[in-house]
Length: 124
Image (cartoon, rainbow, N blue to C red; front, side, top):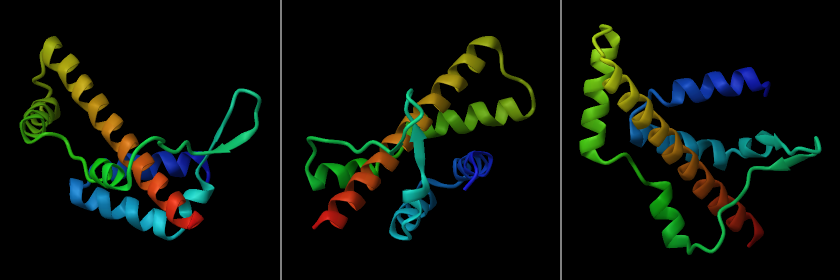
């Protein structure tokens, strides 16, 4: 899948509720789509997405189901509503950027946990 399409899918996936995001990740991994998700190293060689190491299956499952804390989720919704009507001040804009970065980190960790689980089950 071309990188532009992957980025578009990721943007749209971020708009989904957490449960739908979980289902999407599971579906992608179970269908084997993750094998086409590659990243280039500095030498130009293509490598699989990195797996998480040193974690039990239970820990990986817990991480894969992680969501943004309810209080942070509420604040995110408030900031997004204000942003939509262009009413954010500079401090709130910076806060929104930070919360969105946190969401991206959570999404990446969830994906890596799901990927690690899928890889470990494929080796068995």
